[in-house]
Length: 378
Image 1 (cartoon, helix red, strand yellow):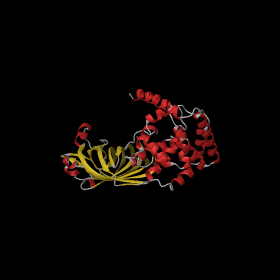
Image 2 (cartoon, one colour):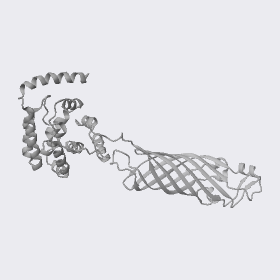
Image 3 (cartoon, one colour):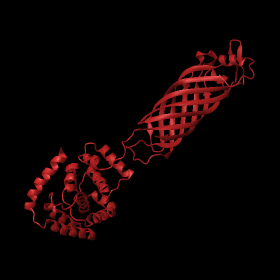
Image 4 (cartoon, one colour):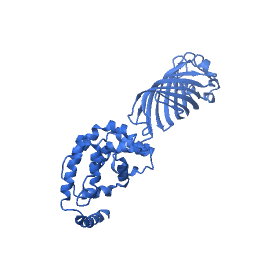
């Protein structure tokens, strides 16, 4: 509906404005633009500001003195940020449509001159902006806007725009950013990590004199969402029996090798997250399996031996996890995307094994230390 209405309004307005403006309006605009281009080349901002104000009466739907990008670059150059900000608050897709409908001045490289000058003056401009009496929000937006006019749409610049929207959600400039400025994909607040670690199992209670220290490995996959950490891990260790285990008259002999297998589901909360270290205590629950590795010395048929001396149990536990960050995996500014990294992952844990439910001789728990490397990924 708007697109049908705009041409009608333009035709009506252009009929009125054509009577109000002299026939040589475009020639006058061309002359002023030439003077403005010369002021840009000589760096005379005072004259530049004066000419832009002189051109104000020369805007109509038959003639357009300065297109939006030319006009705004010159506002930046001449220190007319207040005028710029007021225009931008009112600027919509309809405003741009109206400008494009009007008759533009002939090509004269004014935009290219202004563009080149402001590209060169960026560092100086950012320093001078502090003394212009603008709020932090306005300063931030003005710098974003200049980069937009200079067609800087690199990922880092897009992320600055998204962070501005995050920091100033009620900003009067937010509509303009969302409408005209390229933005990064919608921010995510999670990432995945994979780890592989060397595992050392030690035992408590009645298990301490029965099982030797266990050595093996642990692998895990985790989802990290804000400060929460959820995952699952699989651990396997091998250890010999320091004492025999009996089932009535049958014996799992001393010095026989055993295999300890555990699968757990884990949940934790990050209590410290700094540039080089992350600490997150966790709780877990899962399933354990303690079983013989071979049947060389028992004298019992294999099928009976493995059925007698395979112990399973549900377990619960807790761990202190420490990530030592070594290789950051994201260039994104802090706050927009989670900070992924690769590095060393260490876990010190304690599990209530509950093997005594299957055999009272196995009343004990596990203290483990796992050290290895973790990779972050989407």
